[in-house]
Amino acid sequence: MAALIFGAPSVRADVQVDDRPFDPSRALLLAVDRDDDDMDGQADCLQTSGVPAEDLREVVIQPGLKGPVQISTLGGLRVIRQGKVVPTPFAIAADELPAPLALQASQTSLGGRALALIVTQGGRSERVPVHAVELAILAGDNRPLEDARDALGLSHHVTNDESLPRGAPYEARSRDLDNIRVQIFDAAAQGKRVVARLEAVSADGAQVRSSLELELSRPNAGLPFRSGFVRLVGDEVDRTARGVAGQVLQVALRDRVRVVYRGALGDVYQGLRVARPGDESGTNAARLAMLRVVVLRAYPSGPPVIGVDDLSALRIVRDELGIANEIWLQCELTFGPPNEVSVTIQDPPGSGLLSVSDGDGLPARGGVVQLRAEGQVLGPIETANGAAPQDSALRIARALRRIGLLPTVTVNPPAVFGAGSSADVLVRRGDGHLAQLDAIEGVPLSTDPQQRISLGGVDLGDGLQEFDNMTATGGTLEERTLVKAMSDDDPSTIDLFIVNRFTHGTRQGEAFISASSGPILNSVVLDRNGLRQRQTAWTMAHELGHVLLNQPLHPDNVGADNPALLMDSDNSRGTVNGPKRLLPGDCLRVRRESEVRADPPLLHPYDPRPEKRASGPRVSAD
Image (tube, rainbow, N blue to C red; front, side, top):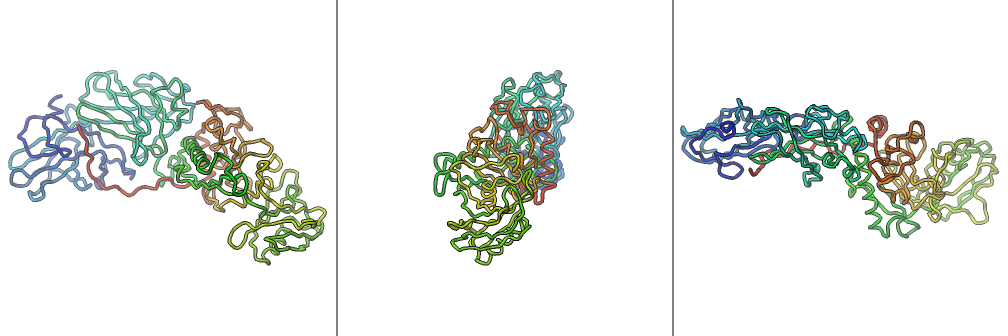
């Protein structure tokens, strides 16, 4: 075994390893480079050019004896110059020295397969021994995962339930395939146990998010070492779940989960990413749902409806966005870094919306409409007998255009038991700001005895008037005024509005989805009680779920109650059993409803494949 690691004594040559003189008594430690650091869909040890540098070791051939230097290798060792694999043997001319070379292991060291770099000049040779180990992450069925093809993901189970095996034997399997274990093959290791570290490193490589010290064992010499099962989780609640200490690792989307093995000759590591690259099309590819958040002020120029000032309001929202990211990580989905999401604090909209037949959708019987728009008298405008709300709205819109305003007519889904659809006229000035609409003192908005005209507005003094079962698809007049006036008109983003409370306190959040076939879609309204729930009801993540799933119902409305599900309607426990789980079927539905069927899609690639990084060996101290 000593000959395997250290090789036979040789004549000293001028070779440097990692910027230090080569020590022939110590082999270079490498991990078989089976990961995919440049995310090109090919294992790094199979690439012939553009080879990533992360798992390479540098050897510099210095000027020494006269004449060219001959380079050859033993075993599964590859030599890389300027990112390209160089077939061995090859020669380096004397005038090319010093010559940096990078070494990469493609096979493990075994008793009959030693790895070494042979440097020969002037008839004198230097043998640089290499010891290669293999580090792997196994799926729940003990299948080695390949970074070029596979990805890690969060479990959809309650973290400390029986689907996470405790004290599992060497050959044990997990029925939850998202559980992982670490495997290490080191031919030089003695005994039946070794220690390794499992780390979650942020996507940019800037920080270690969390780590676990693992003990790996094997029943007999000659076998790889294996750890117990580990479950990946997304938040602190799951990370601190009872009964699974040392078996959970907290991660975020596109983190690299890497195995760090400290052998007698130094540290090596290999890893996989959480989710596949965003520019792929598979169901495990990372996706971004873009949000636009508007925090309302309690009244014009007043304080925000949450927090004590603007800065605290922004902090509360960004904290909630981080919590929503942790939950939706189960579906390889993020709303983006919280500090990059668009969050503004705005006054509630004024009375810039006019509604025809709000709630009942009744046709006209004949009358006239009169009001003020931006201080100008509008009307009288006749409503024809039998005219539908949409027809009357279009007639009012034509009159508004004649005085230089910009109206938009939308038709609302009919309320339950309504005669038909109501219609709204949203009015803006030429500069895009909402116009001011007012009743003329002493003059009714309409003299039509059947078709009512109403002016919308948002007055949060008594909270926001929430919809009921009759008006759920179209919303109340106050809700429609809020959303229609303040949305960004971009159907590829989700608008999220935060108010102080709902008038009747019947809910803490509402979602308007595309399945309702109304003019309000991909929008969420939350009140501060919903935000206050934080990690007990996960209200923001829940309401966003209605939009992403394109589903107005809750699973316990239509089937057996499972209070651990995020979309449960009545659980508010801030524990590992709280309403935070998404099932694999939920994640598939999100991809179908918000990406495949949505036009335009709500889901966007999260991290387009980066340009290949410049190749060069890492420097690692033994």
